[in-house]
Amino acid sequence: MEQPTQTQHWVLRKKPYGEPILNGDQSTFALETAEIPALQEGEVLLKTLYLSNDPTQRSWISPLAQAERLYLPPVQEGEPMKSMGISQVVESRSPEVATGSLVLGIPGWTEYSVTEAQNVSVIDSLPELPITHFLGALGLPGFTAYYALTQIVKATQTDAIVISGAAGAVGTMAVQISKKMIGCRKVIGIAGTDAKCRWVEKLGADVCLNYKSPSFKQELTQETEGFVEIYFDNVGGEILDFMLTRMTKFGRVAASGAISNYNRDADIIGLKNFYEVVTMRLQILGFISIDWIKHLPEVQALLIDEWKKDNLIISEESEMVVDTEFADIPRTWMMLYSGGNTGKLVTKLR
Image (cartoon, rainbow, N blue to C red):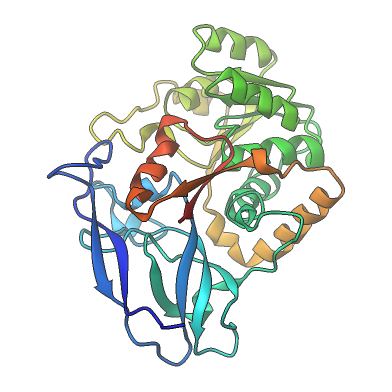
């Protein structure tokens, strides 16, 4: 097979102030062609097969982002867009990674990429499960849910918990881990459609509420009567603000994400009920999963074991894999912000 010498990639053309623009002269991204550098010792040439779509990618391109305040360097204008993904090794000059291997890494929005072998990990796939679950339930989303619950807010059987974004990649695993592995006394999910709520209840939530319902706050107040010990926050904004009023004394908030504000640079939703943090002695605990990334293999093995015991649902309903032309990568990614996915949103490149 003749080795490719050029690759297409999407670069950040202009940092978006508000919702990213996909077309026209002010478009956020630009499709470019670049030369593939010659492979050096210790490097691998990758062909991108699947891309992970994550809300946090929006923070990497925000014009308000300060490099010293982010956990990863932001994407600068003119640079290829970052993304985790699954790639196949086309050529290897490393004894650690064989040609033909499937690997997990950060290829970005590109057809082909060259990186040091130490920057990727070979996937030990399971014949019973699609490999894409290593971007979702068995990847960082599942790891995030497990570590947040067990190490950050230290959930127990005596705790009641509310989980926002419960139909998303992290939320679906947080629901199952809190109910089926930890045994929390009550698990309340929040999602954006009635259909998603029924799916979340199938995963194990005692109840799931549609935040778009006119009676949402009344229903949430009723379900949290007596208040709850833990709030697993994936969205920020108004729901976080309201949940501060539904926490018991010494309650804990796991701050996992703030997708409700990611495209609102001009009018970010703040907190009106922050005084509740003082009066109820609440803990709001931010965390980034990569701080504990060395524990990913052991957590992955634990989740696989629980799945094999039928304690966890990891199935085709746990992810949405979108067959995508390379030219449509940004459009598939934007499905995250319109609530177009259930479970993990994955781009499959044609």
